[in-house]
Amino acid sequence: MSDQAKIFALDHLVLTVADIAATVRFYCSVLGLSEEVFHPCDGSGRHALKFGSQKINLHPAAAPFAPHASHPATGSADLCFLSDWSLEAWQAHLENHNVVIEQGPIERTGATGPIVSLYIRDPDGNLIEIANRA
Image (tube, rainbow, N blue to C red):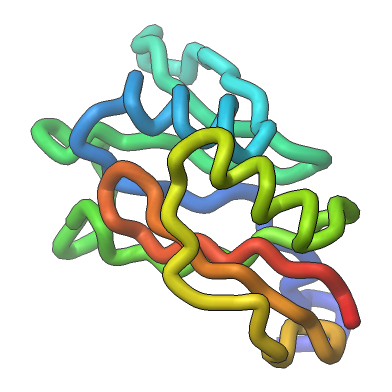
């Protein structure tokens, strides 16, 4: 492989979820992501969550779209989101939405250096990390 054929970005990732509507409500109302309904080549309607230039496609656990992971499962993801909101603002926001903070604020190491994080769970039990760069 030449130096010119390197991976340079993540286009999207997929979450396998038990209830697409519940997942969309959580990620949109609690985390501030936007819902997108898109229609791939097969003409079906699929759901995704968008933020910035990133996208998370949602696959229903009862009937994941092919091709899919060897063992699609709910609650197996661990995602870290960077935020410009202070963690204090996040703590108040999460409390207002009755979302339990499992851990944090706690110092961690992110992809580009030190971060400070809060940990919560989404409706499927996926671990969600909300972080500020330190």
